Length: 112
Length: 113
Image: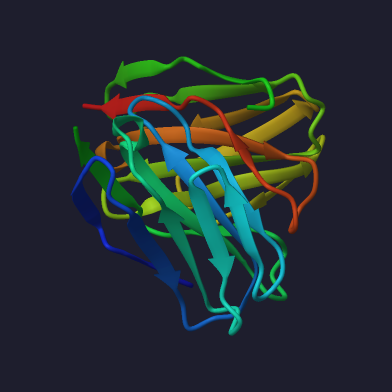
C-alpha cells in the first residue's frame, strides 16, 4: 500500500533546542496533518495543511506543506519537557476517497 | 476531542473468542473510523463508516467487521480473536471525508492470549 516515510524515528534533545521532523512520499497528497500522541491517549491534531506551499503555525509549532505536494515538515522551537510524545504525520492522497495514511511516528524525548 | 469515548478501555481475551469494541461520539459527526496501532506501523485503517448502515473496508480489514446502527455509535467486532489482533484500537470521527481533520478517541488496549 501507500507509505509515508517519517523521520527521524526518535529524537532525544535538550530543553530549549529546536526540533525538526518530516514526512516524505513518492505520491502526491491533498492534505497533510500533524498529530501528537501522549502515552495512553489518542492522537491530538496539532496542525492541518490544505495547500501546497502553505506554512502554518500553532504556538511554537510550525508546519509546511511541500510545494511538490509529496512532503511536509514540522518544526518545534524552544522545546519544553511537555513536548514529549510521539508525533505523527498523516496525509490524504490526491484523488483518494479521503482515507488518511499515517507515518510511523517520531518519538520525542526532552531532557530538562 | 469531538466527545469521543471508547469502551472498554482495556480487555484481555482468549484466542477464538468474539470481541466487540464500542465507539460513541456526541458531536453528530457523519464519518467514523476504526484504526489499529502497532509498533513500527503507525495507525492503520481497519474500517470506516460514511453514515448509518454505510461502511467500507480499510487497509487491514481481514478478521474484523463493523456496524453502525446509529450516528453516534460505531462497533468493531472480532468474530474469533487471534493473537495477531493484539493491539491498541482507536476510533476517530470527522465531519467531512477528505479535507476534514479526524478526531481520535482515547483508545482500547486489547490483548489476545
